[in-house]
Amino acid sequence: MPCYNEEAVLRQFYARTSEVIQGIPDYDFEFVFVNDGSCDGTLAIMRELRAQDTRVSYVNLSRNFGKEIAMIAGIDYLQGNAAVIMDADLQDPPELIPEMISWWEKGYDDICAKCRSRAGETFFKKWSSHTFYRILQHLTNIPIQPDVGDFRLLDKQCLSTASSPSAMPC
Image 1 (cartoon, rainbow, N blue to C red):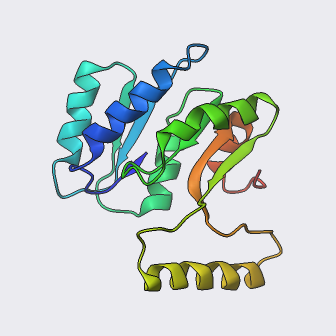
Image 2: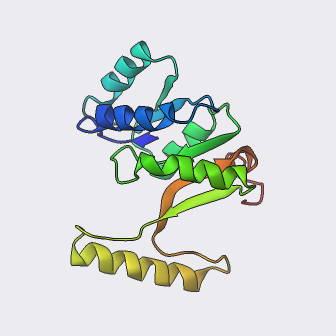
């Protein structure tokens, strides 16, 4: 989980996600938080969570490098067969993790969650997101689904590809 100034929600994210994964007994889970140069108490909370739960690890970046670099830094430290990448601000509902795992068990390597509703977002946010996806679709030969962000489950094959810049994407 890339984190930048998430002190207000990090404990709630951890509690809610922990509750979800406790209901999935067939897998061992780990939390890999990446502090992306936060200026608040995010790192202290990560240390606190690590002290109370051995499943928690964290990477502390020396400054803010941006969400994508933080995600790659976290991927470099993963040890499992798959990873769920999500934002710590709870815009990505952890309750979807069991469904994502069920698709992974069926053989899918990259399971992404698609936003069904943009309720609560401003007109400008909705318009800019729509415009961004339209432009992106015109600039690439890779099919890009609108309203699909970083909230996804990736198989270890995709993870090894993600951390290797010379490899083809999954």
